[in-house]
Length: 119
Image (tube, rainbow, N blue to C red; front, side, top):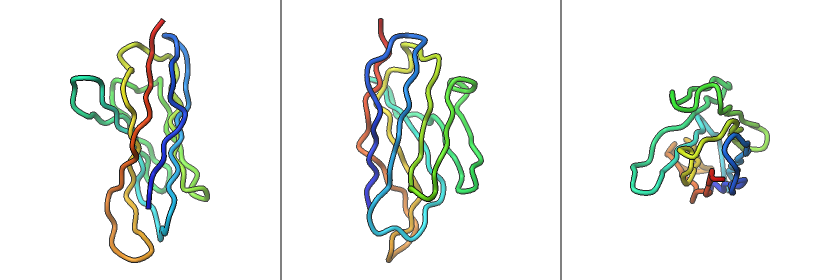
């Protein structure tokens, strides 16, 4: 099982980006999926999560600007980021609670995608 993020890049303040994270491999089921981020010199922090049924939860710092969604048929979670600020600059990591084809639920992490907000 692996998670692969895509969609990061360089964007000006006020701009938008859409991140994607696809889970692949021998997957029996996926529970919650989410996004975290880590800025240089800081600890990894929660950004957003979404349940299997589509109920989202956001960090206060991104409420009203970011939207998390998922496509269960594609085992993919998205993060639409609008009104980006320089303080959103970080490596963004995807995670998911996955039960593989054989075994128990555990949390998997992607390798991250860089988001840089700068003029």
